[in-house]
Image 1: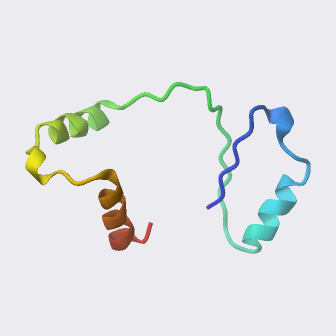
Image 2: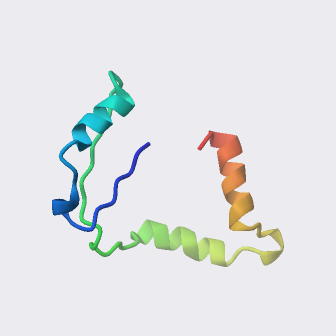
Length: 77
């Protein structure tokens, strides 16, 4: 996956499409363009999951690094 971040749309290089084509060749791709200054809001479902996690026993907590490692190992992320 490639992610490009630009301070402004004016900063997008003219050859970006050629770079994307070279990176992915004949593979199917999805291109998403979004404003980065748009405030991100949690859905009610996300808030509910987070609330449930807060109530879990802290004895079972693992570090973010360990959590990400487990996800990578399990799902190949």
